[in-house]
Length: 213
Image 1: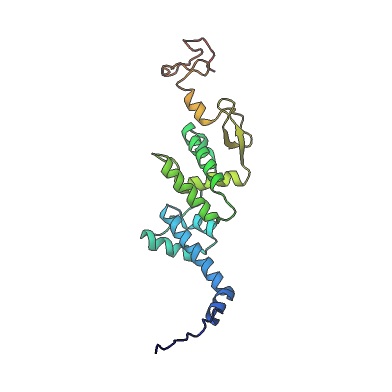
Image 2: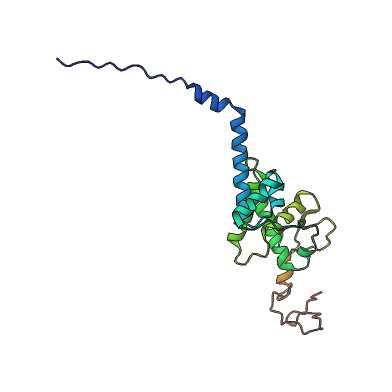
């Protein structure tokens, strides 16, 4: 005669250890600290100084300096972060890269993401899209801060229609890409413009006669 085996009912109630884990506020604080430390390490690997990593994660200077030395093998460079936008405004190509950073930041800046994660995703996407990046992480972060603090605002290009960031008092009506393009193409007929002679000025297009200045 076959023996009937009876199984005890399974206790699905959470054990005391799981309750302690989810109800322990200290555990949540520890997880937050771990996340910030991982983000700081990621920023440092991308080239961030300890001061920039501190701004974005809120970790202490001593912790970040030690982390920087452990990752790079050398101390974090001293000195202040950039404080002037003149470097960006000196060249059209730099402004083009700033515009790209600005659009990427707006796309990546989601409520569910921490400030450090937004900067990481923005800069990594930028370096993947551009063959020769002109901005390192420090300059890219400073460019973003120009937008977020209101020192730079949104303008619209009258040539291509794209929105681009520039200083509040900026009077230029076309974006950096169009300015660079118009160095070599006529804005009226799109004909190729020969390089300017040193010290010379191109007044009109030789193809259509349109004014170039």
